[in-house]
Each structure stands twice: as C-alpha cells, then as structure tokens.
Image (tube, rainbow, N blue to C red):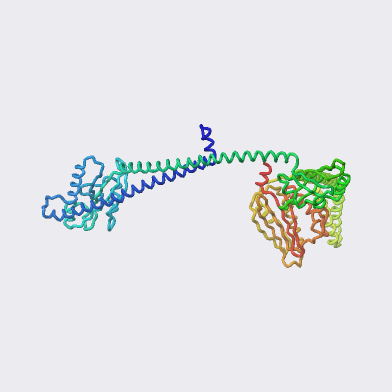
Length: 613
C-alpha cells in the first residue's frame, strides 16, 4: 500500500473495517486494564492508609485517656484532656510546617466544642452522626480539600474516664453536661491524595497505552495480510465473473435456451442457460412436443402447429404453459426451423425458446383493464339511462299528480258535502265514507311517493352527534300496541347528514320492522342499535317478525315491488336512494322465522372531511 489512496482503499475494505473494529476493542481493553490498575492502586491506598491512621489514632486516644488519669495528680492547673489534645496536635501540625503528607486535628462536637470546632460542613456532619450512634466506629471518606482530594479518617473520641467528664463539666457549666461513653469529639487525619492519584493515573495511562500499541501493531499486521489476500481473491473473482457474464450475455441476447429434434420430431438435445434450466428437463429427451407439453394449448393451436410440422415449414411464437418444480405456471414461446441435409432430406428441427410469462401477464392485465373500462362504461351508460328514465318518469309523474289531484280534491269536497247531508238526513254512512277517505289518502300517498322517488333533492348536510340525533328521532316514533322499542347505542360519533332525509330513512325502516311482526309472534320487539367501525357509522334495525322469504329478499329494493296489500313498493327504494346519496350503503339480512336485520352504513364526519380534502 502506497500513498493516501492506498491506505484509504485499505480502510474501506473488509480487512480495514475489521482492523478499525479491532482498534476499538483494543482501546476498550487498554482502558479497562488502565482503569483496573488505577482502581486497584486507589483501593490499596485507602485500605492501608485507613488501617495505619486508625491504629495511630487509637494510640493517641489511649495516651490521652492515660493523661486524664494522671491529671488528677498534676493539680487543677494542668490543662483538661480536650485542651491538651488540641494544643498537642496544633504543636504537631506546626512542627510539620507546610508538609502535604498529612494533617492531624482534634475537633469537638459541633456546638459543644471545648477547644477546636469542625473545619468544614462535611467534618461537622460526620462528627454529629458519630455522636448520635451508640457504638460509633471510625469513618474513612474522600473529600475535596483546598489543594485537591483528601483521604480523611475520623476516629471518635469517647468519654471513658469519669475524672475527664467531671473536669469538662466544670469548664462548660452553661452547656449540657457530659456523661460516660459520650462522643466528646474526634481525631481527624487528612492525607492529601493528589500526588498519589497523579502517580496512579500516569501508571494506568502508561499500561493502557502499552497494551493499545502492542495490540494495534499485531492487528495491523494481520489486517494487511488479510487485505492483500482479499485483493488477490477479488481480482480472480472479477475475472471469472466477467468471463461468465460475456457468455451469459451472448446466450440471453438470443434466447433462453435452444433445442433440437430429429426426423421423428423427438427432442435430442437442449442447450440451456440462465433460468431455462428450470423450464426444460432431460426427461423430455426422446419425446415429441405433444408428449412434453401438457398445458396451455388449444386443439386449434395444435392443429395449426401440426400443419406447419407436416409441411416442414418454419413456425414462430408457438405458445404453451409449463409447470415448474415449485408448482408455478409459466408461459413459454418457441420458434423453430426445419433442418435438411445436403441431399434435401429432412433431418429434424432446430429452434429456440423464451420465457414470456411477463409478456403474457401484461397481455392479461391489458385485457383486464379493457374489460374493467368496458364494464365502467356500461355502468355509466346504465346510470345515464336510469337517470333519463327517472327524468322522464318524473315528468310523467308530475303531470299525472297534477291531473289526479284535481279530481281527488273534487271527490274530497263532494265527500264532505255527502257526509253533512247524511248527518242531516239521519243516514249512517260512516263506514263507506271512511273507506272513501282512506282510499283518497292512499292515492295521495302513492302520488307523493312517486314524486319523491323520481325527484332527487339536494342534500342539506349538518354535522350531528349520531346517537343523540337518533334518540330524538325515535322519541317521536309511535309503535303499535304490544311492540317494544329497544335502543343499544354505542357509536357516539359525528356524522354529516341531511337530518330530514335521514329521518325518513329511520322512520320508514322502524315502521317496516313493526309491520313485519305479527300478532302471533312470541317476542314483539324492534331493536335499534349503533356502532362505530373504523371511519364508518353503522345503524341496525332488527325485528322479531317472520322474516323475508329467500325468493323475495333480492327484490325488496325494486321500485313498485311490495308484498303488502296496501303498499306502494317505493318505501325501500326511496330509503336506498337517500342512503346512497349520502355516500353510504344499506344491506338486509333475513332468515324466515327468525326476523330481519337492516344495516345502514355511513361515513363519519371525519372520514367525509378526509375525502373532501
């Protein structure tokens, strides 16, 4: 490897990337070794220094206790043990001068100190904690000092001599008295750690660096050797791949495979390449094409192909289907040319084959799209014809409504006069006159239904809460005596509807459900329920009637079809028209003897907004 480009290529290779990962692992290992050495040194320092200092402080404490016993012999002018400790330690520190080896202190309990108080908050908190313990133990800790970290040992000083207690109580008469085993203060030794930490860090860094450099050199040597072998292997693979690609290109540029047949039209050889190894099989050797091909050829195609073979004519694009080992069906196209020897004798056929599955799929898709477009055009044409018929029917209905309502009005007026005359003459004509009035009302209803069906009104949508709106509609609904109306609402969503039009839908469906329940029904109940299914609101109306016969169910939405003696056959068609105008759908499921269920499905207000956007 020479130059920057060579090293860049090396680090971009798998060997170079592996070396980088090895370097990262070496770094982690070196850092772990250095950190382990550092923590081991620190632990050793704390363990040994702590033991040394606690031993020394125990000796000092024993010496002071002995002094307390001797003080009774020295007289009242001798200093109290606390003062003696503080002064002796001060003299020791003064003799040390500015040495950073250690600092020895004796401090009292915060607020009750006789000679020296704690120097900092951490020291005061430690001594206060020791004073609160029944059996205080020495405490070692690392704290921040003015010149760096300090290893501190706090050894509690416990009052064990009554003479010492009496002496201190005489001096501190204004404070709480001391008692045996009270913590009267503590010896504190601060040992600077900065120099030791620096030394330990240098040792840890040196060890880590040595390990990292050694592993880096070893890893680089292996990586370079692996890189060179990889380059040689890659060059050999590239040369082989280029050679294979040339032959593959030559073969695939012409056909997927080649075939030969003898004078009896039996296969004698296949020259395969690429995916053709899955299409042709040595099992076909010795067979004719009719014996080898089982799928995708009609009798007419076979007749034309046999005619070409019998006439020894070339043939092109003879198509058939082939089932592969994985049970996939592919489309195959073959072309062939007859072969003659020097004397003009027929020797067989030679030709090529191609996998044309993709082309066949494109042809099928094109045909499907043509059929879809044709169906869409037919549907649009049918919709246009329906609208034209509705328009013509609407004009005819409007004319008939105008012409029929005039005589109906005359009949209604005449009926009123006849009723008054009958009353005046004392003649009872209530039943026949009532039949005439009901017939007039039925004629009016038929005219109104025809007008509603043929005249599509523009929707006046409003966003409403589905369950609350439906509850208001049902509150005005009156069912025949003995039929109960149950509500199971669970949608509670917003819907964008024309309230008046959808009210007609609900009333019509509920009335139909009530009318379907006969007097002999065991349960006489109409159930209205709501639910939300994704972005759709669903309303169901169920009855416990006798159900709809299977031969009648497909016809219920046909205009003017009715099984009722008094029906117009326009109720459900108008309902379906209103629901579809709202962009929804309606479905009826019924089982004879078990009742009928009608489901109206509408888009929620949120879904309508998404579609509009």
